[in-house]
Image 1 (cartoon, rainbow, N blue to C red):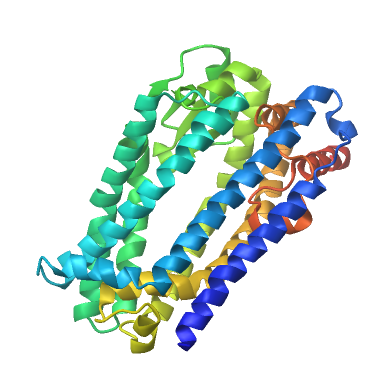
Image 2 (cartoon, rainbow, N blue to C red):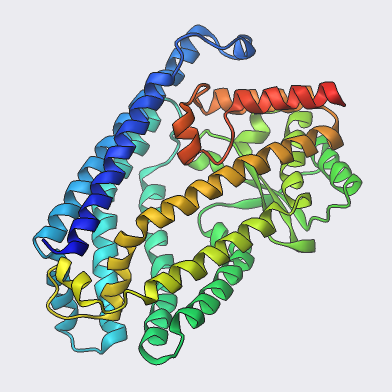
Length: 413
């Protein structure tokens, strides 16, 4: 057997088996006994509902992973990539345009295969537990907009990568620089160009909440361009808040569902946490780490461009830079997982730091704890995830640990 094929099969099956183990451990770790901390927030039926939600979501996730793992394995073994490559080459449009056709066919096929799963998750699973508010028209438009953005944004950067590897010395370095600049550019335009394509942002009306947010932001010398309400309720009843933009152009976005379900002090506590991320430079650290990770990826990629053994593993008749990018993704998966685990570990640390900032500056720890509890209950979040699941996947610490750290911080203060 081709050594590259053997490695890729081990990686694919290894990831799948690991996911099976972790997800099953996570479901088994769900405690049937309601933790005392949430005794006043959950009733028995609601808590049971949250555990059923966890189980059904896990079963759905595993079913989806089983399907796609099987599809990918079969596609590789029967030479599916070579068939797509032959279709792309029929037009005789040159390596870059041929590469775009090749990528477009594969990505479009993946999107089409995912649609039934998205429909079930949105209109059956989320509907069953009272989260779904998405209409069929919105669902279809989201898919169309997503595909359009992929074409408009993804195609040029993919074409640029192909050009650099075909023409430039130290291509991996030029790709790293170009993609990093493009990533930063997207971060700047996303608040005003991309996000409004999917949601409506309206200025928060004058009142107690707006005044409280402005006063707290001013007390922290945190400049904001505006405070906006986002119509998240068009799709889901789940709640959140986030910042958009940089520097003096920062904007606060509040889900309308968050405003509906939380008191003024609770909402400001959540925003104090988000400001804590900025004050602790977490955003800059995350962007820096992302850029460095991209550089490592492109350097390793450069070692596998047009590798005959790798192409033989996928039963390809002709080598190409564009197919190299896709095939490399299979080999890079374990490294990507390691970077993801590191990122999640750092993210959990950052969450504790942002919580501490919110408690020490806004000084309403009980309001913050109440907000965390409401968010947890409203989203039917798992109170007792398995440690391995947290280690591998959680960007936020489990809510009980966050609350414990907040209470400890309050006592020390």
